[in-house]
Image (cartoon, rainbow, N blue to C red; front, side, top):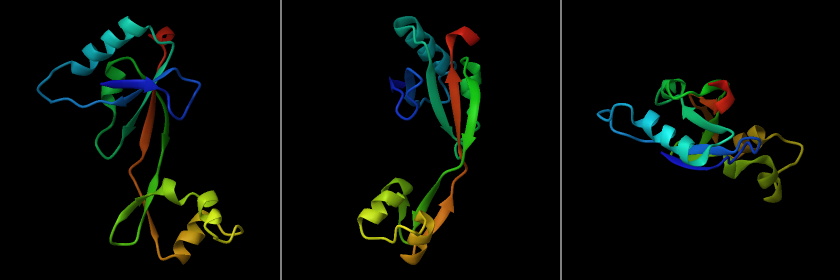
Length: 130
């Protein structure tokens, strides 16, 4: 379990950046998170679960509350998959794209297609909610 300052939502203090464990280590998330809380006494912690890989139920088990759900996407040229962040509209316009077109319209005109993912869930831990 790796922690850092919250990356995208600055109203929260910390974010769980990575968590990976063997299925054979029972209670690993609870033990690691409990140690983190004891050492750093955070005012808030967030994390995101990728719905491709599971429901995020581990977060409810360690005291997090469901906050919100978003669906993301990526682009493809049918040979490669590209993260959408490199095709943000303002970047495309800087490259000479028509500013009256939407990001999606620009990408379509360049021969790319959009593929939706399974979504991400935002989880929030606030010590006062326990």
